[in-house]
Length: 411
Image 1 (cartoon, rainbow, N blue to C red):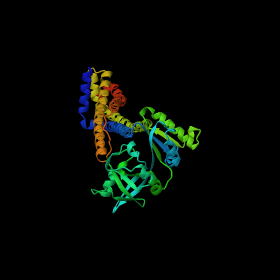
Image 2 (image 1 turned 135 degrees about the vertical axis):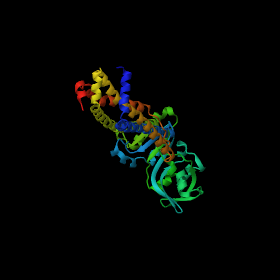
Image 3 (image 1 turned 30 degrees about the horizontal axis):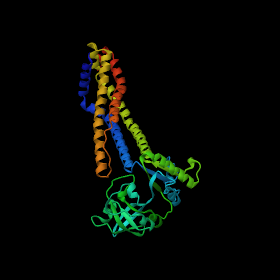
Image 4 (image 1 turned 60 degrees about the horizontal axis):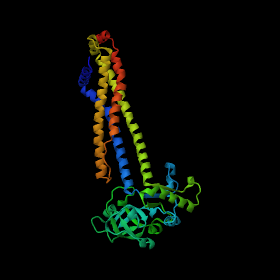
């Protein structure tokens, strides 16, 4: 009996019970679909994060207040007040950090903005005028505040596109007044729509940091410093200059006791990629459980099929079919079942991931790229075929071991 004939026989056996075969592979379809969907979305999330990080510029260095978070227990570090005006002054001196081009202090918090009868919850960013340059923030209309506004604690605001829409609708916003924490701010600029970013400026009001500290947030410290190195080649050296300057300022001799942390864009991209990769692997492992459940289902159905086809097995053995022939036929049936299930799962998974990326892009304004995870496709096909072999082996051996005489007598 040739292998080709074994394939044809196995196909006919499956074709005889189409409905049962379809229900049998449902677990495989669901499992492979879940794996494809999780890995495609995970790859899309990685690309989204990397694009956003790279959009901040390869020369950007972030300095955070408090000890660098290493887990959920360190979440409170983001509220540390370790970055002060003295630190900003030291970092602004070229003799301390010669490889830094410019540095922007940053404070932020949430508040409700109002204009006439409209109210909108937004994020307040207090910064210096250099924020416009570092983050490349083109204006739809108006101007950005300058350093004179910072020194004068001017109540001028640059608002995001979403804030403008929510508070002013189709009306004119430039030159109008909005109220933040009981203070009136004049709108001097409106940002072009940016989409979801590491900092969502579309839903924010940007004001001078001095104004934010004194009139809105009521703080004397900074949440972040955003620095820009002179060139990409010296970014690591610039980051080290920042660390040394802040350690001297804070009188820290042991680097393990730093009450601040410095992150370059390369570091941030690598860390975020590692986090999403680990999360993707974990979710893929969870989704793979359904493949095991599907494999058990296939083994059960194949055992039922062997029992129902006992006389057929006996007849084939009586006509000369060997142990190997029967084993091959039933193994092929199991592998063909799981293979078809794997292909269906891949197609459904890719379809769902494409639909998800369209929804996230169109309705949530995320630049979420659709990607075809080739490793996931290979994994899905390979695992589904392996499950067919593993879970089909026992029913196939059971069929191949049947005695032809007893099989022919079976009713």
